[in-house]
Length: 255
Image (tube, rainbow, N blue to C red; front, side):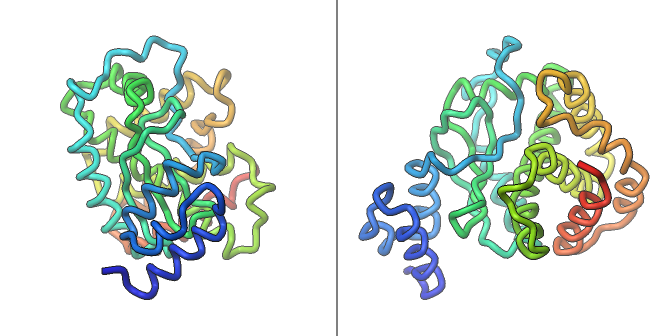
């Protein structure tokens, strides 16, 4: 049954998206169904993607040899654990997106933090950019950091609004730096030793393709903050503090 808060949220979504959504259907749907509808129909909404690129033969990973189900299960678990640090409800959905990326976040206009698992086979294949660097046993650790990155985009939108920052004036690089900071803080705090290969791979790929993907050239920023990120990971901390500290670190940089 849809509660009053959810009904209010769905009405806001229906009003904003207008012709893109059928309001009558949304009013009787669950939050998950609303999230599905927003992602499937509101393609004018920019999706912040865990950019893996599409020009480098990333055709080895398929839904057969790397199923979506375990990734979706992990994403839902992480969403529940990190929800205390994100004011908008986090929903995990699996839909087809045109972006050539396996994961994306939609957060700016829907009143939700929607983490998208992309059913586009060409998008899912982009995991190969990272997986080719690591052993198969490290894949889900890499996925965990990637999911944290997407939730970090929602944290970026939230903290920016709270600070009175005009989202339209934020650079793409600033958003990607925030998301990578958030993911790094999460990994150090929650994953411990399991994070080492994943974070090393993240930094390596960001550096390797910094020239061709300038909006994701975060490696030098992460390096500048490495000691503070490392110190944060010495003990587990509340999700709300993770969100706030990511904001503080991002603001300390000149982007």
